[in-house]
Amino acid sequence: MIAPLLLVLARPLTLAQRALPPQSARRVLLALAHSRPVTWLVFPPLAALLDIGGLWLLYRTPLLAATHHQPLIHAAVQVHVVLAGLLFTFAICQLDPLRHRWNLAWRGLTLLAAGAGHAILAKTLYVARPPATTYSAVDLHTGAQLMYYGGDLVEIALAAVLAVQWYLATGRAHARLQRRQRRPPLTADSPPHTSRDF
Image (cartoon, rainbow, N blue to C red; front, side, top):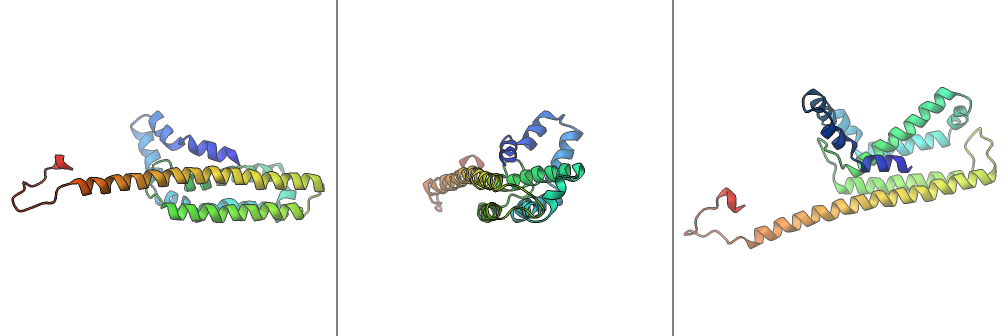
C-alpha cells in the first residue's frame, strides 16, 4: 500500500523528463502524459474504481484462491494491484505535469469514497474469508487489521498531500488578490500601466 505513494511522491515523470535527452524521448514522454487517454485514466473516480474495484474483485471472488494455484494469474494480479495503486495515487496527488489537472474537490471526494470502500472491504474480510480459501481466523483477522489500519495511514498521507496543495493554491490566490488591492485605481490623468507594473 505504501509503495505507490512513495513512487508518486518521487515525481517519476518529472525525473524522467529531466534525465532523458531533450530531443525525441522527452517529447514522446510529454506527448504521452498530455494525451487524452492518460487524461481520462487519471480522472480520480475512474482511477479509484480500477484500484478499489480490483481489490473487491480479488478478495470477494474466487480469484484469490486461483492465484495460489496459477503462477501466471498470481503475477498478473500482483502487477494489476501495483499499477492500479500507482494510477490511483497519481490521480489523487497529481504532482507531475499533466494536460488537465482535476481540481481538489474531485480528488478529495474521491479519496474519501475510496477510503470508505477500502475500509469496508477490510471489515468484510475480518468477518468472512475470501471465497474458496482456507485461512485461519487469526490470519484472517491479522490481514484485515493490517489492511484497515495500513490503508488509513496511506489515506492520511494522501490527504496531507492534498492539504498542502490546497494551502499553496489558496495562498497564491490570496497573494494575487492583495497585489490587485494595492494597485492605485486608474484615473483620467494617471499614466497607463506598462507590462512591468504587473
